[in-house]
Image (cartoon, rainbow, N blue to C red; front, side):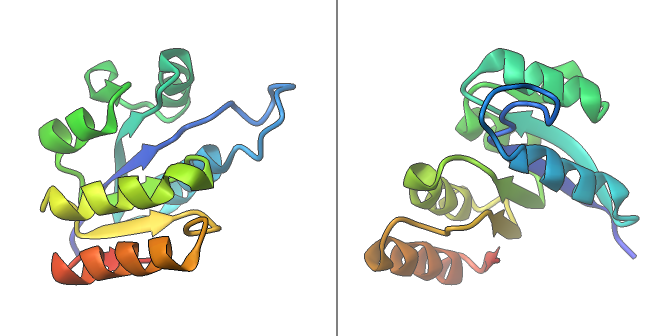
Length: 134
C-alpha cells in the first residue's frame, strides 16, 4: 500500500500549554504519525513558533515548516491536509487546497464552516477538483 504524505495547517498550541486550546492540530498530527500508511511531512501556522514546536514534536524537517500554507502546498505538495484552524477561515483554506490541484484529500476539523453557503462552496470546489473532503 502507498504511503500518503500528510500536512497540518493550523498547528496551534501544544496540549501542555496553559493557553485556551483543544490542541486539535496535535491530535491530527498524532493520527497521521500513528497511521502505518501516512508520513507527516509538513506543517503551517501563522504563529511561526507554534509551527516550529509542532515540527519538533513530530520530527518534521525544519525546511517543511511554514507560516504561509499556500507556500507549503506549492513546495511540499502533500497528499492529505488536515485543516485545524479557527472555523472562520476553514472555507478559504479548503478551497485553496482544492484549487492548488496537489492535494488528494482534506480533513477539516469541525465545524466545517460558519454557515451553509460556505459549506456548499467547500464541497463544490472539492468535487470540482476531485479532492476528498471529510
